[in-house]
Length: 207
Image 1 (cartoon, rainbow, N blue to C red):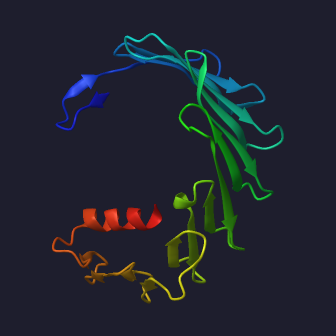
Image 2 (tube, rainbow, N blue to C red; image 1 turned 180 degrees about the vertical axis):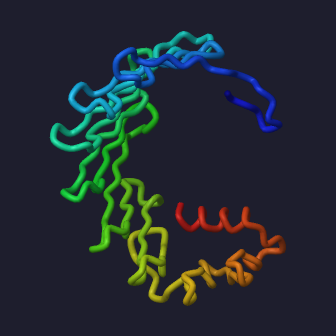
């Protein structure tokens, strides 16, 4: 059941299941319909989705292409009325981590590409985008706490994030953070030290 912000019921979609495998085969409701298919030799992997959205009746088609010998997504396509909206073509390393993606379609004028770099522990240290303004670089301490982060591909000289012995961030990109004895955030450098603001702060750092 779907609900609005007040909890009022707006829509109860109908879910159809495959007779033999018991997987979700289709979902309908509110004028929308979605039909799902699965990879024959790996039945837990979705192969694609076809949909009719609202009153537009324009067919939406999503195709997932998987690597033949492992459960790794190789390519994802999204077509609306037969035209590519976007497609992602992934390169994945031997550890199963994405190292590159090529992005094309009408959603990406001029196309786009991203390279990811990792350290020996598998933590993302580099997000190198074809649009330089979207580049990000990171560094971590020995137990995975982020110590540095920057826009671009060059780390700052000093740490901009400091952690205490409880692995709580006490300084975060210019803001001083404080906690009570239960580990709840009490101070974040703003007038309203709410968890919502801390979440926003974290998102700004990660973006």
